[in-house]
Length: 411
Image (cartoon, rainbow, N blue to C red; front, side):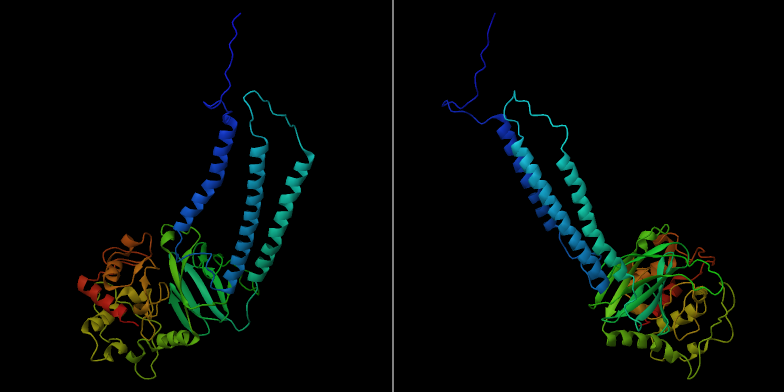
């Protein structure tokens, strides 16, 4: 019979060495503590000012949501700290002390089972109460004398109508600071979702369902009060078709004086082109491509400022005598279309195509020539192909340049 003696591990000087269990424990603790710190450092390095950040509130509505978020965040950190401490305690207390040791087997623990059932239930209650309070707080109209704006979602652009001011614009929502706002939301086609992260939570924009006679239509509403001036980016947050990702918006919050100046400029735009006391004709006879122009020109074309850029003059004449006016409106002219975006003060907008590119001459020319090549499924005809149940515009390159010059002059 042969006996083999196993030599105890130790240092060369004869002292006892560190066992494998202790070395494994140390490595686990280091990884356990260092990895989160490294991850936090990497995340902090990625911090920046993002245009669509939901943790940078600028309205009372957004403040409520942000406070709820912060509350839940700290509850999560508390839970995480408790879990880490318990996990560290378990790793240390129940670590493997030797190769031959067999740990005591545990089949159940009534106290632990009660604890991890009641504990999470209490946490859920602590989170649910402020959540329900926030829901009720954000569903109430902020003021009876609030500015009301009717928001209509289209594939794939936004329409904003101000009943009190008589203004209808597109893709840029202008609001006065420190004044309550009521947004009435509806869709002209499919379900959209209105979301400007810095101003508040999302709201579905639904087609208005039919109601019985005598009943009021049902709309979704969004109530808030802007607290700071600035430009805030928004987005459709509900998949609504092929160009859903290209359905953006901008909310411009100005002082009360700045907002009123914008409204005044709206009605001053093109107004000088009309004879004194004349009203724009709501029913404009369209000149289809290839048809002879009407002998009687629009009255506003006869009152053009003599110092105006000839390209702008040509663009106005081309625009008002083309199929463009079937869909688009310009305040103070015979163009009164309501199918597409209203183009009043178009030259003052910073973007075109519902926020997808900068509003400049080059981009506008590209858009007029080939809108569907830039934004798929858009209901607008190009110069050589139909769109939105309308034939191709048939505009020449020179006419496109002129129309672009005219639209950019609308400021």
